[in-house]
Image (cartoon, rainbow, N blue to C red; front, side):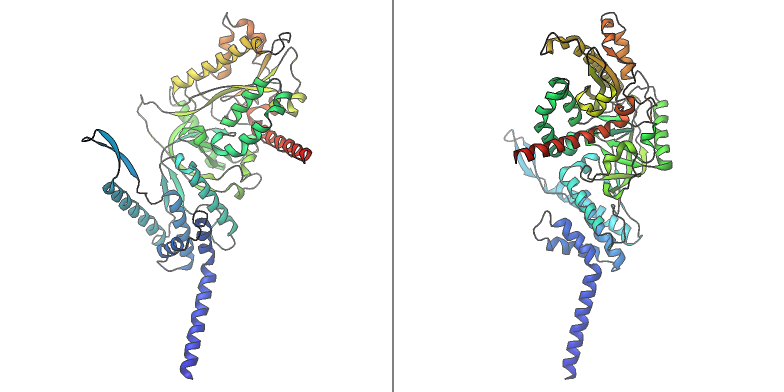
Length: 498
């Protein structure tokens, strides 16, 4: 009888301990399961592996952090995959697919050493490690971006159970890229499915109400492929801002949020870099950068400046990098750098009478026309060439516009300059003034030449009549209103069909 009672007591004690541990450790296990179940139907083995890798030393608070580290390493520092590669066979004189097992074993060994070091830093020193990635492409890879978004949202939803905030546990260091005082408005890379479909479906309705079909087409192309606007010194940019950090092209960039003293210091560093060089390339720092990934839903009104409020929408951004520090990468004086973006200028288009402010304010996308060149903006000669090509494109468009008119009897079109990549157009200086000629000055100099002088009455570059609502500082608001209008009209069309 006594032995029976002992067995029951042991079973009850074991069950109590089991359910206590299950209750205590459920949130981090649930977090891992939720993130893995997107890719695996029943991620039992990998969840157990995460528990095994994170179970020593056996401390509840540390276990939670280690499970998060396991997930973050899986996202940004995954185990190398064994892939076949092309090798040239000198015997057959042909390329063949082969596995490089020796190279693969070396990659795995290095990966294991780096992973053990990061777990050691967290377990022994109780210090959050830094996860290194080569460039922004790693973060913007579709599978990685989706994984980051799911992970951050899951951490946010479980914040009452986890003791960390709803950001990455680890800091992320991006080794190579360019930091620029720019804000990417839209872009193909980040929202292809969300934006191209609605724009295409409503193009016919928009073009029928716009100044002309060419105007609407050019505007859509400019917006959907992703222009960047300059960060300005006006009130629209007061408070925390996000700068652009990318590698290769502005559409592969990530948003870097910076505030308070760090914001002023970072902008000062950019100004100092411009002042200390002879180059007239667009302001940029070739640097590595460190920060922590946050979901946009973590920020409140006022924690992003007025010109960037659309970033608070978690459906628009997968993550934002909260700035912690950077290190400038030195380059030889004669080195050539490469980072591409749209060099653009925006105009209001009309005819003999200048369109009224109220008319343009209501639906500005029907009245503006951008001109743009895609170029290498961190190389002086390439950037200057793009500005010249852009100015010539504006002049040639006006010069030949009569050939495109559906009605030859219409009055010639006229353009009123609004803003550009290097000019916010609001009347205040941009945050980091570039050296060299601005886009507007380049255009003015061409218009002063004898062959183009007759066009000065049709290309007006000194009018600021639209700056209160159509400057670069208000373009993000215009973009948001455009997509709201498209969604509303699509809903009305759907209800009529129904």
